[in-house]
Image 1 (cartoon, one colour):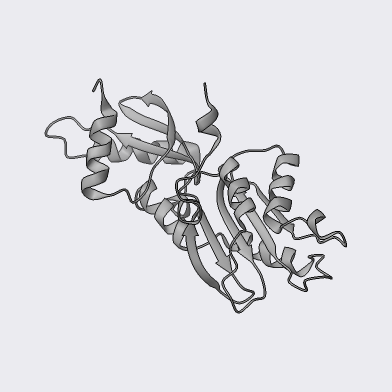
Image 2 (cartoon, rainbow, N blue to C red):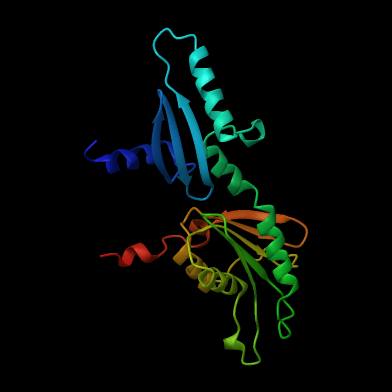
Length: 226
């Protein structure tokens, strides 16, 4: 299709968009079996085997080919995943990465907040699976303090940078603790608008939202692209 964008916009307006799968695929062929090496933003890397059947096939040959490849590649039953990439993305947004949640809570416990008495921890996960955490760091000269999200982003940059796929913000508060306006913009620099942001206390996740909901009609790096 020479102009896909109008069709995409029309379908999105008619049915909405549940998930966007950003995927890069390398295709290999072996005796009629398609071997897909996929890198999916926000999920990681996957291998998919697709045996192409001839018309009228009873599929026995195709099953045998896939079984042979699984044996050669040491793909065990516990390595298999059901559902689509879109299903996995939606599930990931609904439930935070347990390790990321633990990191945010641990960071909150180490925060330096002697003036406000309000410790906050934040943790981010990159699209390639790395995780970084940070805490708020206050200062006697109040404007010199730093939010937990900014600390986590600083750790991310020092660790090599990358795109943020998921965020957890945690604090021991009865109220919902969301990133401040400045940190929403900081997150926008490294995260897509649909990136899930989990807001938690020290016992449960109180709400899962997205950067787009927290920062609507946002301005990001793409607006400066030539």
